[in-house]
Image 1: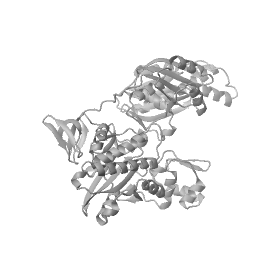
Image 2: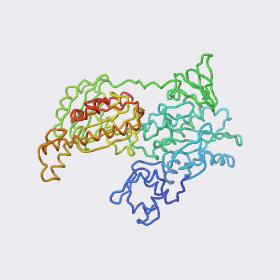
Image 3: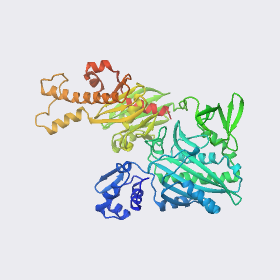
Image 4: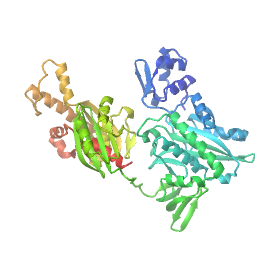
Length: 580
């Protein structure tokens, strides 16, 4: 466990939501002189130190942290009847409340302990809950029932449903894996541990909740709130508020009416409802069948070859028997997709999942888009786009369209692809959707190249890990730099030759060699991370795509599959929409 002092926790809480703070304000919060604030920061854990960005005396973190201010926590908790305590470090928030329950049963009702770090945090079946500081939202609360313990069997399902409702209200589409895991597909987002004791004729439930706030890099098959929220960066305070509101409501309803009023909603939120599943115990399959629902007491209902069965044991895990099918929801029949580049706007009209027409125009005159809307816009259900252009240019686009545009940004996780970019908020949306679009043209490891105002060269592994990539000036920017910064090179660009013998041709060849060299170097790096017998493809898009493909060495082109794709961003948007 990292040993931090109160000043460190105060400093982290002030910066946790990602807002900029001046060093003078931060110094007062931490209780140190401004000239010593850097020393305090260098004592933070390494994975947090690297998140800091400084400019003109302002500090901010590139992504939010699940670190809280005690006063804010108490105010949020009190809103829903909880009495909160914030522990920077403890063994286990559940253990603290269980000890309280043994000493004073009535005092534990709606007592809440939120912990930043736990040395012995645990989940179901005694598994250790792995986390790093700031990456996980963890809290426990107590609830006293006038019911015998055997009537609390569905309480874990009530808690899971409440958490699911809270996250759904924030735009995080999470499902439940029986009995109380929060999942997105096969990836786990959070879990719940409920421990009960009997005292003074009352049943006391201590409920521990753990939700991944940001993607844990050391845990396989995991996801997080930030990774699953495509539209916005959510603060930990907002998530805590939503969770406590739904938990208080759900537990009050359960206390009065039981689980039956929530049973239908739980089954609708269950990932495995109607699917073939296997039940495992100690790694061994003990039952197979189709999940048909849950009972009023929270038992799993399973249709097996030997008949219908109920499973109640908390020691049995549920696993899909086969790969999860892709979601097949009703798709919008008519769409307008937008690609807002730096110098021009591209768009595509989509009907029944197929691109039927494309267009483009410079931002100085977008009247063509407005005209096409008059001709084609009737019946369009959504306008979705991604943009790297300025806010002013996006406003120019919006002025041509009578309906609201949903602008998408880069994401930590989509279509099964995991984004390893350190700060997703800084990641160009065009690069991300180029990567998503590349999966229409290659299922192998892939170098994705975009030749526009800038040239980007990105790497995608065969098993869908986006590793990042490089950015360099595009051909026009290189030419402008030469013209501005040299005395004799402001001249027309010539043609590409292996051994250019004129200055104009030397300029053209040098710029092309720079781009081709970047592509080949990234290809070599990606091959180094891939098995020798595996293929690494190259997908190129943008105005200069054909020229780059032609200029690549013949031996490289013969040895590798190179695909030129126009409007790759549009295909990425279409892929994303089809999976929603």
